[in-house]
Length: 185
Image 1: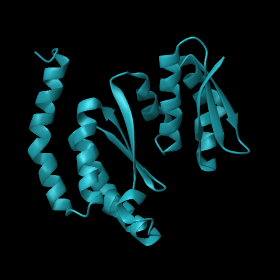
Image 2: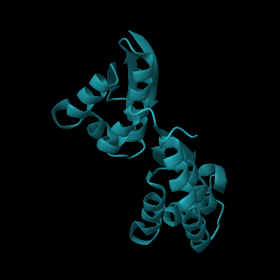
Image 3: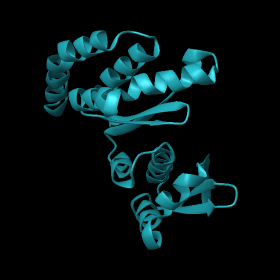
Image 4: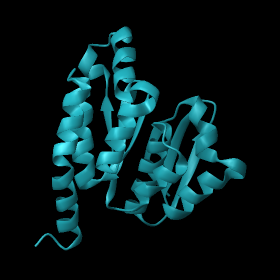
């Protein structure tokens, strides 16, 4: 078997990756036509391809999504080749200032998760804020709008400005998705 890659997984996410009685790991291996080698002691997961390199690469992305805080059901969406995952480092926006990272995380989440929910709802994406990263899961078109909204918050823009941007572009987002589903003619 050929190694596709390995990912450092937070210790707290190893159990989620394995799942009850190994169900999550087994599903990733089945869907991804891959083998996962989970080194629980060092929290490193190595993905090997069985016979389909593209599917095995998708399995690697699913492992990364779970490591970044997504639940397995959402992470499994990455087996659809129209869905992708992007990871944005918060550190790049705050010069590694731990206090600022915490503030920015709070701004991204919003009171009772409100900001994150608005971005998810208006763009049709899923967002996970874990450690020093923001991860976005969604289709190619939606993820662009969610990424822009997240970047605006990371740059210090007011929430109201971000919400206005999203509301203004929801129509365009829906149109682009519809155009894409009809073949982009």
